[in-house]
Length: 257
Length: 265
Image 1: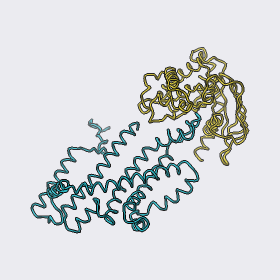
Image 2 (image 1 turned 120 degrees about the horizontal axis):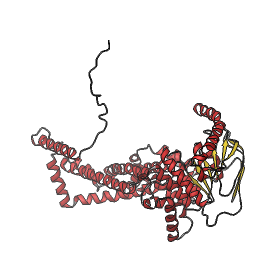
Image 3 (image 1 turned 90 degrees about the vertical axis):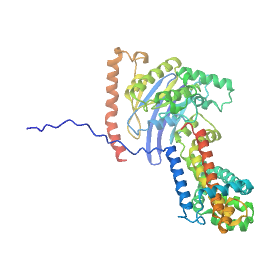
Image 4 (image 1 turned 45 degrees about the vertical axis):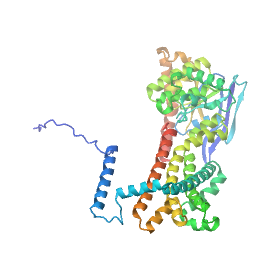
């Protein structure tokens, strides 16, 4: 399935947030979106996922959806968005409950998602008993259980400490290399974008426009090795030079807003 | 020349502001209060006509229990408070949920609730007696009205403060509206609803006693008033003790329900 995003403009009342966004996401691709604070990254994700109606524009899919998908466009949230009164297994089962599945089918899907994310031993725990990293694993398991066509990841690691972020990135990459789920990945973190993405879309400050699309030719499984370090370092410099001045201006705008 | 300063420990400054409760201390303080009270009455420092001793109150309470009068009054009061509380809570839950979820209900309901909530509901009892008669319905309605408003506010504000991201999460999975209300909005509002119930239960007890003092022959409130009129202060205090026990029981039950339902917090 290929995704075409065409947002001519999007505004919240008088505030122009996005302008002239035209982007195609290919099947099995991870596209990272970076840009200064307030440039409309999360708004873009909300529009793609159907949670925000664009002022002028549309998002269309081409081709067939993956077989058995129960929720083609599935979010992974920055703050996990877990139901604190439900156990891990019940949180993962939540998006399945209105699909008319039998109890056995539902339990099977939940068991599989928990196993894939290393949560099988924590099925009966409640969110407050888990670390931040484990909570986000639950968020990922809940996203995977509906067999998504596109994962919409809204800064999924930004609430976590550096070590947990590193571990979860490795896990996410392993999952992605196995299942090849298409993903749109919003982040502030250049290293996350360079580690995970096939292409990095750099947005300008508000109203967010596509400033540049930077492809990363190195396969993901080779990026952790030392041989890719020089290339990735160069790309990091390039990305930082694209957003540095804009980020500084955006920061001042946020302070004085 | 530099001064030689003797080594000294950095003083600890982080103490205090951590008050704790001790059951043993509370129990001893209660016993001490009863002892002083008993002594003050026994030594005639206080006239038993104005304040009977704990022993006399206990004896009056025992007599009331053995004669059957206590249950006769208490059962009437329990039926009134339970009916009024259930009615007010059910209506409050429905109205509060509607106001939290629907623009029309919020536009109509919010100004009305804000305007009517501050009225002391006992002031409406004479009007309700005119409309509904002196019987049970006017008393139950007064209690229900008193319970309704805090319940509406607790439910409305509880649902309103459910984290928006949880609703968005459910919408992102295409969860139907009814399921979002049932599985996210109401469970998320439960802490607020239960603390609203604590407030409404206290109001219900207050209105029960007031309503029974104004227009009833039976019930704990009526019993306390009659005892006061006859200067039977031991009976009066026995009635007050029963009301205190009733309030404590309601509080204990609600605490237990909170512990069971909000264990996830």
